[in-house]
Amino acid sequence: MGLIEEHWDDLLRLAASIKFGHATASLIVGKLSASSRQNTLAAALKEYGALRRTVYAARYLAAETYRRKIARQLNKGESLHSLRRDLHYAHQGKIRERFLAGQTEQAWCLTLLTNSVVTWTSEYYGLAVAQMRAEGRAVDNELLAHISPAHSENVNYHGTINVEVDTELAKLDPAGYRPLRARRRERP
Image (cartoon, rainbow, N blue to C red; front, side, top):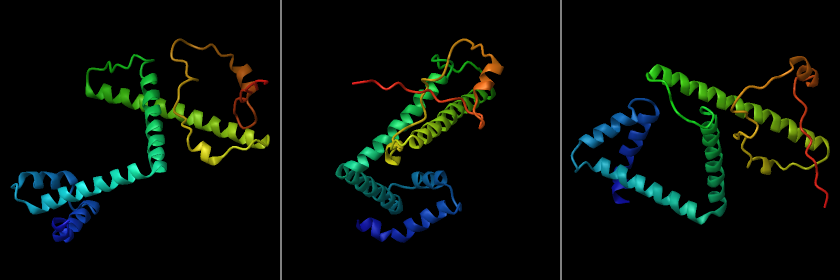
């Protein structure tokens, strides 16, 4: 703590330099790494980092609600990664382009496809929730916070789909949406 207190003003100046763009984090890390082992500012920065990690770990271990919140976010991230893996060449997941430009194009296409699936699913989740609420069913907003639109159950990975365009267009509602599927309720 004494080392941090001694260099507190320098640490603030360092943070402000990064925040306002006067220096990049990589430049500062490079300069501090290149300096001698006796650099007390680098030692103070290291100690401050250890202190922050300790506070975070204590907060994480002490608060069950915080741990659950972190777990939810991790699960949402994992579901997005899973969707990307599933979309990437229909479960094959190989970058086939040899050059950087082609690989970059492939990555952008995957991003576009992933965003399209997530947007489509989000839009229809919203329609389903609106319909459920219109029918008088209670849908808690806190429950909706746990739902991720990054899933691929409704994606056809292989083959083609033959669609009768006029028939499908006739099914759309005035806003241009397909009808929602009605889920059958099981009888007890």
